Amino acid sequence: MQILRNVWFRILIVGLAFFELGIAYFHSTLPSPTSVTAIPTIPAIPSNTPSPTPSLFPTETSTPNQIAAPVCHPGHTIMGILNPSIPGYLNILKAKTHFEGKLFLLVLTLREIPDEITINSDNIEEGMPELAWGVTIFNDPKSDDWDYKLQSFTFKHGPEQTGSILTLFREKTYVWSVNKEAGGTQTIFVGTLSVDKKARTITLRGLIPGISSQSFLEIFAYSKYVADQLCIWTPHSPN
Image (cartoon, rainbow, N blue to C red):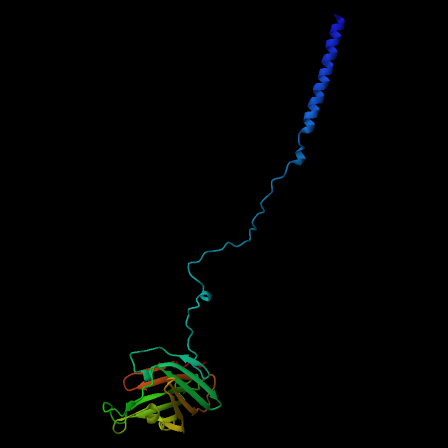
């Protein structure tokens, strides 16, 4: 009996040993805690990053449809507006200017240049201004008065006449100035006029004392009843 007890005791001891070996082997197969893949962190958004603010209105720089104001000085081209309500030979579509020294040139592109027009109309009183194309020039930006006019111009004088613009106004193109002593105006130079019917242009040339790139130009086409004008003089206040 004692021998049987010893055998069972040995078997129990051996079983416990194998059990401990199994537990150790089981633990050895488990992954190490240090081998767990870390969860990546999302970088924080800097606190000074500006948030875009939506705008219902575009800025001034995003409005390309703005129309620039005309540059009413010698050496520039000034655009007019189509106006079917007035005669085509008075509707200025474009005015191109140029100067070299005193010599000034004005090219008017008109809506139409007819074969003939009539001056000295019976409907106009004798001595009244009737028809003109030209430019008023302001050399002093602080002055209230103009300095010179280059124009092809006619007063009502005598019976009606019909003809082309060149024929009727060839001898009626002058440079005018203000006569401050006498309190009126006077012609000081003879100008020239040319007409290109195909291009619909009237070109005036004349000598303008003191003209510069800073002179201001008022360009006009005038009749007794209607007129067209590009640029309007506004005198500047003295500093």
